[in-house]
Image (tube, rainbow, N blue to C red; front, top):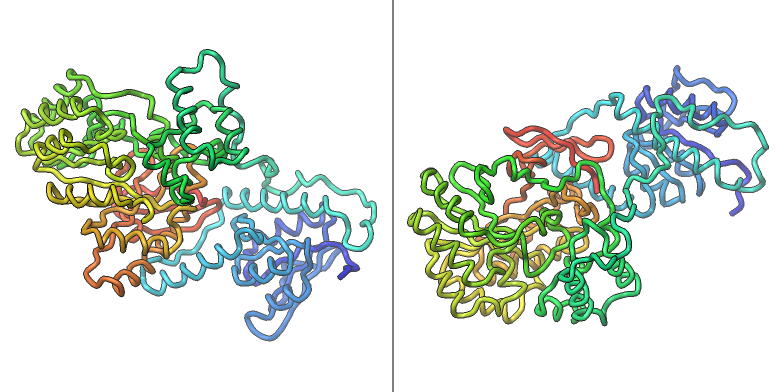
Length: 547
């Protein structure tokens, strides 16, 4: 239907803090944008003048929301922190900005509404502590920037019926407190590497050709073109024949984990090369001693597959297998520090090394500490089950006392070959799983239920479900921590119905930069502009960007 009025900036004044009302007022007057404040009471700080007016409605707490939704049209903008009201406005074709500067559109409002409902549920169950959001200078700047972006958008639109009067419009930069250009992209998508040259490493060239040869028939033109660019600092694509076969069978959850996309070129606030801060606890080369009774040994930074979400993806080419001199140094440290009861053999993936290299690790550490337990941290039984031949089997048997931390993210990663190997490995030592919560892979309840039911049926113990770390180029994989907590609550109920003795995994995250792991189910989540302020128990608070 043709509209006979200009576009309007609506303000849900019942939920709009007074500080923001004044910012909106000045911006609307300067930009000559029609602005209507709607509330269930008169607003003494808002006067009807020029393009600004207020409407006082009666009829209950939702009356103002209903008035706005009845009168809003496609192209309008609404300022509100009421998510159900935002949902109704977006359905009418409007764009919504909340009091923290977050923008709601048809692409994200349903997910926002789901999070709001989950937040209410978490509060009711005592998991989430309701806090009053404070509007400091940073939050006011974020809101002003979002308002500036919306005013630019509205001014750029053609009038609904006829062109607006050719009035002189003040520059939007005059909006109070605006200090940066909100129209600039949030993510950096600048290429990080020139076109390949003759100096490109032969091994890297071979890896790209091998990758394309294995799954090229399933790749889109866009994927092929992206691979040809071979951006610097982007993890070289690498998969095994076993994983290639699963991808070629049309498995989207596995494909998403291993096929590179242009999203990896985007970086967001707070991303780090080493998001766990392992170097802060590396007292000797390759050994991270962060927790009192256990240490992690970086046996190699090489893997049989390259997971696109890897938190060490920027470090994969830093070094290869440990030398005997490095092994001796680590062994001496283990011998001296008797408080260590377990050493995690990680990397990279240690089981991707040659059997000879693995034997050197076992023999060196066992000679120094016959009593220490090994924990093999690996994806090999899932991504390359034929790697565990008789020689490696005997070596794993000789490494006991030991256990295995098996990394997998989706039920479809299990195969007849991996099932047979896992059944044998369980005869050697306990196996626990660790999983990363990944958008587009396992961030739906049914995916998690299927995964953990499969883990339970194979007699494996769920251990960790990790929130995505702030590794460079992984923002497209990260899930909101609030959504993660909602999924954990729902998963617990479903799994208890299916298997009453099921043991839930720990939903955990590492403090960025090296503060250690903590339970996200027991941390406080405080919504702030652009994400969350997370306050773990007995650990420093930090900012986690909203994906």
